[in-house]
Length: 323
Ligand SMILES: *[C@@H]1O[C@H](CO)[C@@H](O)[C@H](O)[C@H]1NC(C)=O
Ligand SMILES: *[C@@H]1O[C@H](CO)[C@@H](O)[C@H](O)[C@H]1NC(C)=O
Ligand SMILES: *[C@@H]1O[C@H](CO)[C@@H](O)[C@H](O)[C@H]1NC(C)=O
Figure (tube, rainbow, N blue to C red):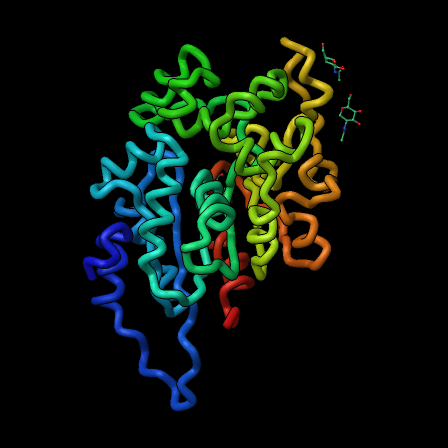
């Protein structure tokens, strides 16, 4: 099982200790494995995540792999906040390429959903993804840094790194949240300096002149998903605006020349976002939506309030009988 080093103890645990029920005589094909990528300051090696993965494994009768970048829970937690997102993507790509070639399904919690999207868009060697579900993922970035809970040392360290500015070269290579910080009042600066989200969302290439850095493959790969379900938490105050979970954001063209007026309650929804309306459909989202494969769902409560009432109806709809 060393092969799955990255997927760590959890995967081994389920591979070794959960006996699948005896197969029916017709020998139905095995359910697709599920990849899970956790949020900022969390790790799939932590006990809370292990519990969730165990429930998933049992409910959908399949293998569940947690994607971890570090080898220990604390290292993995640190790297979820204090690292270069592009490095994390590279590590994940190379580890995922060791899985056999069966397609997989995936669940991303919060920023984990951005990482899964990066893997889909940028990592042809990874197994192909069929169904993607993201919970509270800041797909259009965050417009304010999250407040840190007491004793959340990863968050506190991130706050330190970004103290002198989120768009400094240092923050853009050492703090993952800075790499998806999308300041609507400094949009031009974001486009120039963002080392991650602007590329992940194909924003730079489409909005600035020419399409030099535009790769249609990114959007084609996302459009190839059988389904993409994006879940927003209706009381989310960690991801601002909460509609970022549905690809909503403030209107950057209205705010980009306003320095302090800043806050706006008007949120541009996905269908009016330039990355959606652009004729090239750079992220594939229009194709997904027009073919009924993009589902925007809501859950009650605060960020990652993953109650049974929230999770199971959504996941059952996606994974039950999804071959
Ligand atoms: C965003 O703001 C610009 C400039 O004020 C305006 O032309 C555009 O209609 C706005 N877009 C949306 C979707 O509200
Ligand atoms: C913002 O300012 C730039 C340069 O000052 C100008 O070219 C542009 O038209 C302005 N945009 C809006 C939406 O007012
Ligand atoms: C979490 O969601 C449940 C419904 O699923 C809701 O009743 C509860 O108030 C929410 N809790 C928080 C803290 O947001």
